[in-house]
Image 1: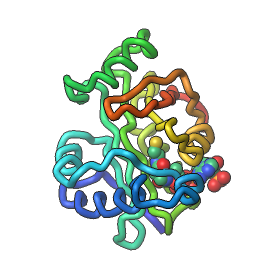
Image 2 (image 1 turned 45 degrees about the vertical axis):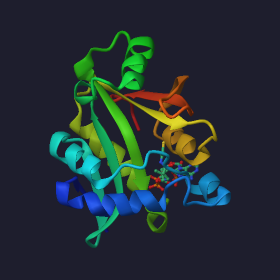
Image 3 (image 1 turned 30 degrees about the horizontal axis):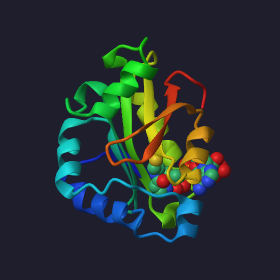
Image 4 (image 1 turned 180 degrees about the horizontal axis):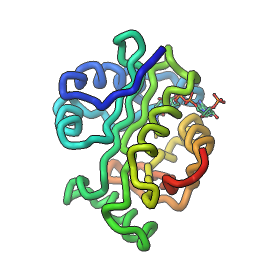
Length: 183
Ligand SMILES: CC(C)(COP(=O)(O)OP(=O)(O)OC[C@H]1O[C@@H](n2cnc3c(N)ncnc32)[C@H](O)[C@@H]1OP(=O)(O)O)[C@@H](O)C(=O)NCCC(=O)NCCS
């Protein structure tokens, strides 16, 4: 059985290893379609830094092995230069206060652990940690589409509230949900 915990700085190398298995360039077109993909190739230093700063950077372990992770953090911790997050906040979430918003940066589950509910439970743990009157948003690449991620987020009650181009030039759909919804 797997368990969920806060990511620690020392988990960073395993997180990089898992994210590399799911990198856009590593996967075939069929695998990208079936299981999804990650486009942001962060190094261990980035994960280490988020593990130190964000209480909502979570991992799932199965018998000691990293099975998945959810990199999220409060809007207040977003890099001042993160124009994408700031534009989403201003244009799509104008009625929400900064302290009520959590950004989902990456969700990833190893192919060997897919469809066991691990990503769902990582999100449910996050929702449990957050105030009920708060919201979360994430961005899903649309060039090309990531149907696995869209299907997963739709199953968790997220809805697409718009789209915008990101710094890497790829269009992203913006997916949002309030924390106090049922699933
Ligand atoms: C997308 C991803 C996070 C799903 O993780 P998971 O642990 O397999 O998902 P869960 O088992 O918790 O699935 C919960 C529900 O989401 C939906 N879902 C999950 N994977 C799906 C897929 N590949 N296609 C369509 N719907 C999917 C289903 O409704 C599923 O419920 P069910 O299995 O009872 O039908 C995982 O496949 C992954 O890491 N993909 C690569 C990285 C990625 O694309 N991340 C998102 C970037 S924006």
